[in-house]
Image 1 (cartoon, one colour):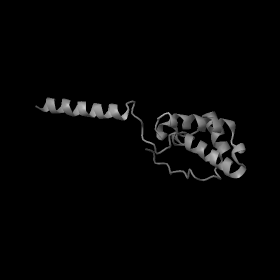
Image 2 (cartoon, helix red, strand yellow; image 1 turned 135 degrees about the vertical axis):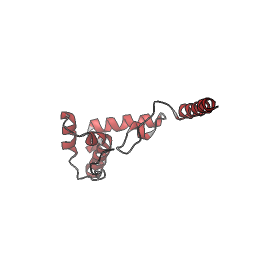
Image 3 (cartoon, one colour; image 1 turned 90 degrees about the vertical axis):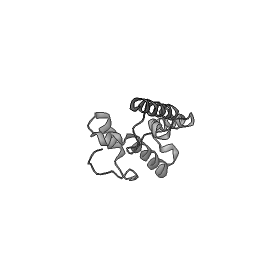
Image 4 (cartoon, helix red, strand yellow; image 1 turned 90 degrees about the horizontal axis):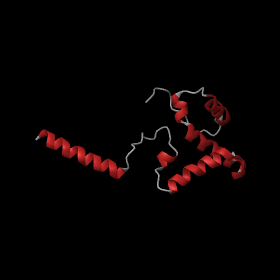
Length: 113
């Protein structure tokens, strides 16, 4: 975690275009980079609210559709479109994590005895 102040990700007056230009040029802090998907969703909302669905930039619509199809296919929302507060993801599924925890508990119990 960093000590930078938390951004208001729901602020639709945010300079989204400037943000994405800075992202493209690589001139951002790690905390700003973590906001990418949240800023993209914010830009999507701003454009829909101000100009209707036709105002959404094609790359934003494509990225949103790509994230949503992953969710429909069973991927967690936090993994498909991660937010800055999303937990880090394990390479294991929930079932695999449970199995690994059981294995570790058994191994630790056998080691102690």
